[in-house]
Length: 487
Image 1 (spheres, rainbow, N blue to C red):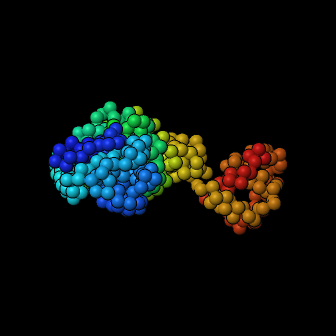
Image 2 (image 1 turned 60 degrees about the vertical axis):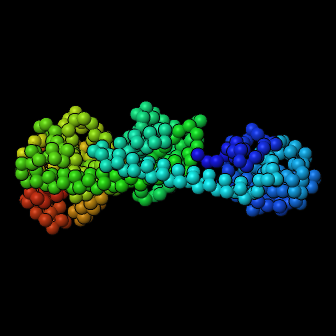
Image 3 (image 1 turned 180 degrees about the vertical axis):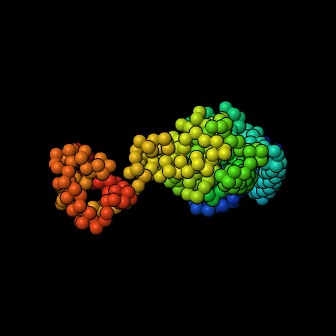
């Protein structure tokens, strides 16, 4: 504990007596400084006990001296009597009492150097005690970090060492661990401060009050892998901050290891997915990855559009429901195998194009993936999630990018541009599968008239309509351009 003015006065060897400001004697002493200057304040940093004999001090100077010492945060004033002053000037006693500045009388037999030595020894002893406390705390934290459940044990140990509550948050500000467990309820009060810390990015630390509590928060690692929040009644001493910093370093290392292990497991999941697509039996070894296939039949879900697929898989794995879900990266997509009871959770991811297969089995995984990929491509046009079963109702046009389809249709039908009669006749003839009489009847013309129009179309296009492929292209082009079917 730091040496206080009260401790100094209580030491009978120095013979010091408090003459004013006794209510503030519990102030800690950072150092001792001796000066006979009329204004020693420029040479003080705060927390010092200033010693003087008042050699240049007149009655009119007392209030100014006290005001200057108070303004720089001096711990107190020691006045040596028996030299230039036989007793402390009454004006100085009064000014110190009014300002609440501790004023100590130093008797003639007590040299100032004796007070300096006493404070110096006490400061050194306090620093040594702090160093030993920090060292012991660091040792205990390192032991906790080395246990099986190291991160949680480290959080609990830090809370006990500082008699504080501790929260460990992930990079998005969600709670990972808390000590005690009930401290997790404080997270709601910290939301704005966590958001500020996240916005700073990289290494950052902050201290702030939370009601009657003092809180210390810092980011873990240059690329913030989480946040450490520590709070308690009363301020944190320098030693406490050393302990918090040690815990933060250990937690950063532990989280990096967890992240590396998680990334390796996710890569293995992707590899096992490829093996499953080839029909290899891997179910028996998935347990080593803490992975499990959902019961059959399951759905294959493809998610497109994630900026960081590895981060998406990690987030989904952290949030996944109790039902088994298999997640892996594949190309530019994230693939999930999920039962119907967890399907809404996976398809409800915002900002992504999501495709869902028909019910699938492990043996039919490749087909299920193909269906989900096809549905996801359609979902990229604006829908949040598309099921493969819906594609038949959407028609072929939904499988072709809108811009490409428009360009294709305009190019195919360019020779018939502004030939509305021919376009309507072609539309009716194709709609009736090339049957002349029904198509002519639909148009209200003789079948020979229709034959002539179709032959004209062939001439303009330079293509034979006897070819099924040509008919299919023309039909698709007419649908894209919106030609009327009620010709």
